[in-house]
Amino acid sequence: MGVTKEKSQEYDQMLRVKDKVAVITGAGSGIGRAAALRLASHGAKICLLDLNNDRTEDVEEQIRELGGESLFVDTDVSDPERVRQAFEAISEKFGRIDIVFANAGINGTLSPIEDFPPEEWDQTLTTNLKGTFLTVKYAIPHMKQSGGSIIITSSINGNRKFDGFGFAAYSSSKAGQTAFAKMAALELARYKIRVNVICPGAIKTNIGESTEPTPQLDKIKIPVEYPEGSQPLEHGPGQPENVADLVLFLASRESSHITGTEIYIDGAETLL
Ligand code: NAP
Image (cartoon, rainbow, N blue to C red; front, side, top):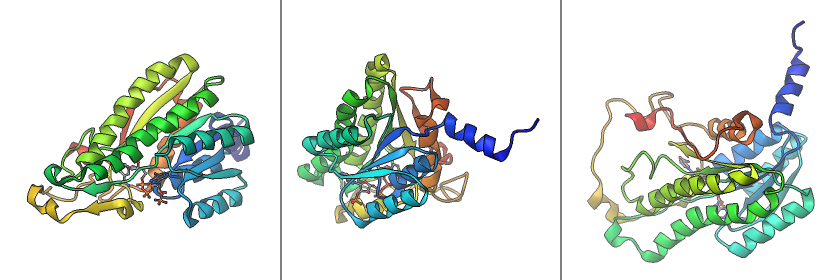
């Protein structure tokens, strides 16, 4: 007897993240937004941590339209007290946390190293790397009882690619996230908490808004030209929804034996 469409959908939902509680940082835009909607469409309850703006309201509206449940907590991921309080508020409302997507990030200032203002270096590192540390740190007390999945958004930059001229702070933060994910995977395995890191290539999002190139950049650029395009698979940047599918997989039981691993999602961009 064949499996009906309804049965297969039911099975699909059971297998994945139905009724799990997912915390997503940077959930108002780009990759975080797409992951929030993908996880919600598979039945997860979504906690959106982001700086307060209209975009987050729009994501919540779309989650409601999907029949899902959400909670927004206005949080700057670089602020320890606000991150701690956010996890407390989530735990109070939902009583559990199963999935954490530590994703918020900025490109920040792009500058030659000798001209890089130290305070702007700190801003990128504090948002991207310390923000990841704080998100994981304050999630642990709420996850260690039942286990779960943590996914960290790093990048091809700092891991497989080093030609982003001026991206010294960004790439260092992204390399740091990969090392941190591996340390965390080993340390948290005893609690059955898996930790993986995803490394997207160019993805169409609003990250340009947090990109601040300085005029001095021209002096360090080395022209790099590929014969035709730089994304062999799609001939263009990936979509946030492509990344959301990977997040769903890593959040679900289908990836139950995968931890401490970085996964590239770049349409072979970095193999050129
Ligand atoms: P995006 O569209 O700009 O989304 C980033 C989100 O993070 C925004 O909602 C932003 O809020 C939020 N955010 C920034 N600083 C924050 C803070 N201190 N506290 C809380 N939230 C904060 O960019 P995206 O491309 O989706 O970026 C998501 C992640 O993917 C980042 O870690 C980025 O490094 C990584 N990534 C992106 C690409 C790409 O090509 N797009 C490639 C590789 C890796 P506001 O808008 O309110 O500032």
